[in-house]
Image (cartoon, rainbow, N blue to C red; front, side, top):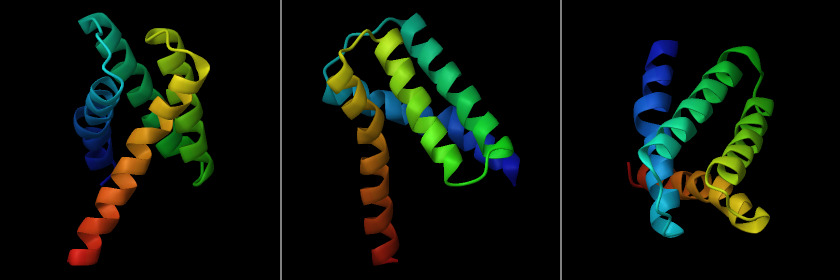
Length: 102
């Protein structure tokens, strides 16, 4: 079942997060920047999933997402902060809406 999480992280969650960030903040990124962001955040998320207990793994993921966004996309501190937390907030809201209707 952990392999399902790996597939979800690499191919669904991180690319979708990247799409949300680039759409909301109207960023023009190169393919290399996109690939680096997805690769780094996927590796950190998988590592923290297996080796760090919850809720600390989530905190680690947000910290590394912030650092990745700050240095790969070269955004200022405030935009980087909001870009790091915005996809998580959006996923939580959509998930709660879906599960409340089911």
